[in-house]
Structures are given as structure tokens and as C-alpha cells.
Length: 372
Image (cartoon, rainbow, N blue to C red):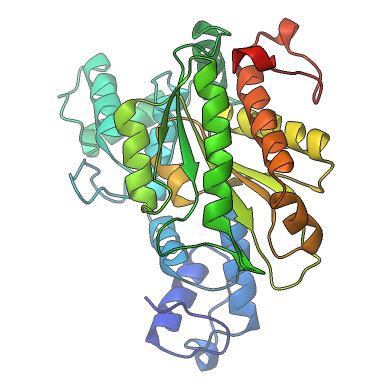
């Protein structure tokens, strides 16, 4: 769809305004502005995007429109079931997943997508409660959920299970399975500045990281080659199919002014729903990279971007600098800087698996050169 933006006036804008009004973000009572994408509408869209972990630009494109559509649904409004090839999405699915997690059932995250793992978890609940285990959330299942209510109150109940799973896997990286995702690729070069392309830089960077991980016995996969690209769906499918423990997605940022600079790291997160281990790894990676490079700290952020949402394991996306900033670009073009980034990411992964008592301070851990 063509993105809707301020100044547009159409029936599509009227639909968007209606959806924003239905979730309490916009007063849509004046018929004279019902079809107009005005400043108030843009502010409401930005508020919605910020709340949902979508890139905040005040425009309604495919991602924002889908999120707005899903925000209408409340748990119990419709029957929920797994539909292969076209899974149901919406806030009602998120609410169901959240309640199952709070009742002690294991789901990777409450991502608002009713896929096979959600259906199987629902079947487990139905069996435990003496219902027909069909994986369909209909009237009988809704009645049972209402009767049980929430059994875990406060905190993040998934966090303890995730931490235990990481601890049980042991501190050694030997045998860990990591997917490395070099952003863009092929015809999609990503950011380009002064003849330098994002896709080439991050391919070189992932190759450097790949060598370090492999030397430690990590099994690695790349989502693309040096000359081709892939969609977020294809990249996520690869990670899910190989049963990866982690996904590291590397990008370079860009902006319309050269003043924007620094490093930022992203994990799956929107509201109370977040990848707890992804958030932990994002924090470790961000702190290690800032400490080792001296780059501006643009911090970590929860987002619902495709790759972060579609992968079933902790996934982080690291923007290692701004190619449009002269200072950042000079560093990014320096092989030694890229080695420093690769080393920092390697250390962040290692620290994720270390017991708290053995975890060193940020910026001091070194992986001995002889093991590479």
C-alpha cells in the first residue's frame, strides 16, 4: 500500500482515523476532518507506533496498518485457531498468549501471531483443564480462562524460565548454534554514502565475527551470501529451521543529516511483551561496543520489526554506526574498527552464558587469540 501521511485526504485516511479513535488515541467526532490526515492524526500515529515498537515516522504503511487492524481485537471477540499459511494476528492473540504464559505454559513470547506453537500450548492447557484439546480458543476455552484468571501477578514470568534455560546450556560456546544476519544484500545495498555501501560493510563484519565464533566451536549459519539478499521471512525461517540459539543481525544506520551518529541495539519488545534473553543480549552488546569503540551510546530499544518478531529465539539487531556521519564512516571503513566490533559482539555472546559470579566487568574481557 502507498503510505498515508500528513496532508492526505481519502477514505483510507477515514478508516485509519476510525481505528485510532476506537483505541482512544484520537477524537474523531468532527465530520469535517474525518477524512483528513492532519497534525493531530500524525501525532496519534506516532504515539501508536511508539507504543507498539514500530519505527516512529508518523506515516501509516503496511506495518503500522497491520498493527492498527490487530489492535481492534479483544480476547473473546472471535474464535482463534491456527490457519496454516495465513495465521491470525491481533491483540486478542497477544492476550491469549500472555495468559497462557502467566498460567505457567511455555511460549517463546507473546507476539500476537497464532501459529503452531501457540495452538500446541493451547492444547496443553485444554488437556489439563479437561477440555477437548483441539487448539481452538472458542467459548468453552474462554470460559475456562476467565474462571482461572491470572495466576502470576507482577514481574515477568517468562524471565525465570528463560534464565534457567540459558544457565542449563552451560557457559561454554562449544556447540552453540548462532545465525549471523548481514543486513540487506543483492540489489538492496542499504545505506550508501561516499561510495561506501552498508551491505558490503556488514558482510565483512559478519565474516570477521563468523571466524571468531567458529574458532570457539560455535556452529554458525549466514542468512545470505556476499552477493545476494533475502527477505526477513526467509532469514527468520532459516534461523527457526536450524534451531538456532541466537540470531545476530548487523546493520549500519543512515540519516538525512550528518550529525546523527553512534551505536544502537534492538531486541523484540512491545509494551509488556519482550524477549527477555534478547533484551539481556542487546544490553550486553551495546555496553561492550560503546566501551570498546568510544562511539555515542544510542542505547537499546524494543521493536517489533520483522526479523525480531518472526524468530523463535533471542534475536538482536545492532546498528554499528551511521554511514552518513563522517566520523562514524571513517571508523566503519577501518578494518581494525570492524575487528573491534566483532570482538565486542563475541564477548557479549560469551557473557550471556556466564554465571553471574564469573561475569567480568564491561569492556575488559578478552578472548585469547590462540583459540581463534
